[in-house]
Length: 172
Length: 343
Image (cartoon, rainbow over all chains, first blue to last red; front, top):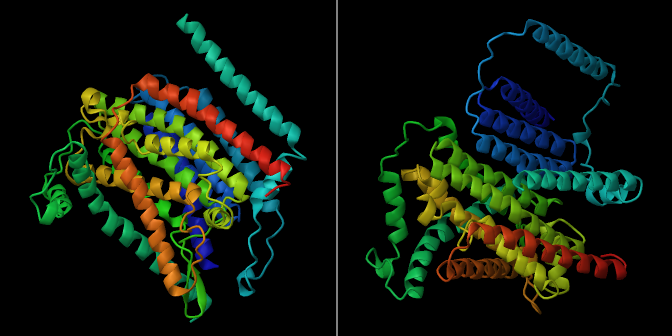
């Protein structure tokens, strides 16, 4: 169990530290990379929750596709260093702090109210064979959540077509 | 010995075997094969001075890369410039974790499956690693602070994202017919039925062409097109950092060949042959690596035969030919599997 705990602490810490780095970092390219590391930390957490499929999807979709496109755009725009703000915007700063505190408080409250995990070490007994979650997810997507699934597909298609039209219009 | 210790030792032994084969046996000799093969195809001797038949040329090349001065240009992003080659090399080498390189060997009364990690998301894992490898190329291009490098990095990311789609869709057809994402199940299905390259010949061709694009090999080596971009993303690299780019190209080639063999050419299996016992297990390994070596030779053969594509041709091929073909292949396979009543 201590091994699992160490792994959890490491990957959760990694995810949080790099999420912070993403916000604080002044170079946009490095921010994107910090976010990539955060997603890797989250993928490890998903594996620890016995959901390796989700872990693979996080890496393929987020790290492998979306963030590469982010990087692509940032490089094309050639944003090297974020320009330093001249005015400090005191009101926004205070509001941001309040919002962050409220969100953190909410998350903390939910976590503390959650029922306590079962006591005792499950590792003492024989390890429960992992359920193959891929057929389960597939069946759910094409039965209970069919409408949502198709709606998302149509939405993505609409977005792709919209992007094409926008770029085409500029060219004409 | 407790089962846990046994599993740990078996895993370490398997990693040692796989890396010994890929890193020590295949990688250096591939460089020799590539250069001698180029010589053969272009009707010239190729490197033939170092050792018999020039066999020690790879050794000399590696030594040269170690001994050279490692120049870091003044205006590069030092951290990313250093990390980029490693980001490219590590995914290339870790792909082998899920590829079954043999059937199984009985050791101390237990059957040891010849695959390092027999996970149920194996094929997805390979695609995840491929998509992470892109960062190595893109970052090398960006961190070098050189317009040729940047263009090379951008080209490579656009190319890999485009071809990953058709590669993934054609692989999905294989997974649908095998009914599993586990590479060893895919191989077992092919051993029990027929190699996927026969019923899914379209998907197989699409996958192989996309694999050439994913590994940045000719005819898709636009990211390092020397006639236009000096050397593309690795223009500003020297000594061993350049060596790492060099190594990862060959490691990627080995990994891509191993994936082609696993998904379409029956992995370690041979038709009408069952591998049992220790010798059977070892023989199945020989079969797997022999098939892989064959596809590596195809990679080399194509490189010295075909000219480079133009960029618009590359994009047209990827989006207008390969992707529709792979989707069509998937639809046909899915329809057949569905009418048969599921795999």
